[in-house]
Image (tube, rainbow, N blue to C red; front, side):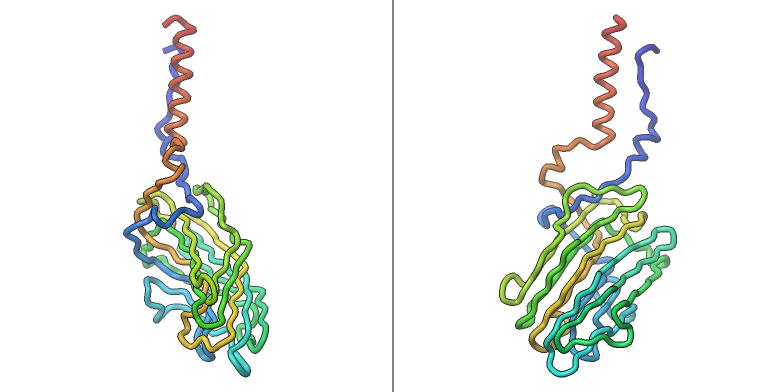
Length: 256
């Protein structure tokens, strides 16, 4: 019929899911950890680069990359990169271009260390990224900058990343930031990467191993937007409204 515009149902289904950046923690609930990629300064002989599923690091890839000669005073700085390739379900966690100061030194892996993990048999599902840092050992601090999220094909992002942040034992000892896709979206179906330049500092023995760390984890949970996201029409809904207005206009012009 003249003036009728049809919207292909396949087009509506092809709209890519969105990862919303820097969402408020109050918009997230019922979360379960899928995996964690962690960079830390620990006591001599303990691992510093860790990748593990769930909440238990035992039995998963890890590297001991930082040691100390003398007292536990010093810092490590790395380009922290976590990336995922969906077609082979492979995660790559790299600590590269490392720099140390004070009494810290690199062990065998040197200034560059990458862990690769094949999760193809694990059927991981998650819709949330958590960027998290802790500096609660006496005299410790952490900072990061140039935080970047890159969505792969079929995925888009919305919002503004908080590109730098810090935590310290003498101030605010915890830092976190959240990215989230709508409930039910599985980000393990898409390629993506997150990277940042991270520095960890200590002036005392970080004996617990968990007192100075920066990590990125993924979680499966409920995302309930309470901000301006609610007022933004979904792309397809918005498009249908536009077509509806155009259809009415064409109908009136043709006297139908």
